[in-house]
Image (cartoon, rainbow, N blue to C red; front, side):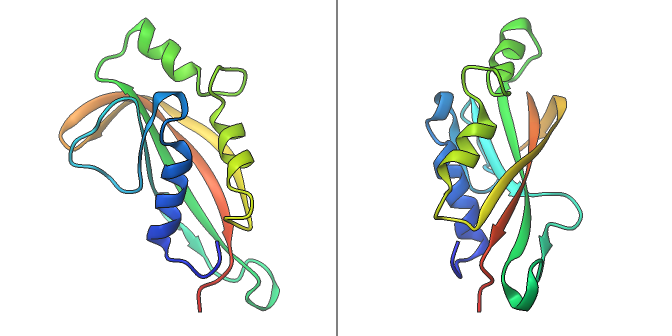
Length: 140
C-alpha cells in the first residue's frame, strides 16, 4: 500500500473479505455485527513496526481478523468456522495472500487462534482470530 493511511489498509483488507464465504467485512469494530463477519483491527501489543527494511523501505503492520460466525457454540457454527481454515471451502489464508498483490508490499497469514467465544459490542459470538503481517510502503 503506497503511502496510504492505516485506516485505508484496514478498509482494503475488509473489502477483500467482504462477500467471501458470505462474510460481512468490517474495517473497524462495528456497533452491530451482521454474521458471518470479518472484523479487521490492529493486533494486541505492538502492531506497527517501522523501518523493517533498510532506508525506510517498508513498515510491518500486524492485523487481527476476528472471524465471527454465530452467537452460540454448536456443531453448525464449528463447521462454518472450519470452512475458513486451509483445506476448507473458504480458505482465508489463500484469499488474503492471493488478492492483496499490488495493494500492499506483502501479506502473510501467520496464525489462527482463540477458536472460542468473543465479546463484541456487548454480544458474545463464536469465532476465531486470524493474525496477519502486512508490509507497506512507509507514508511520508
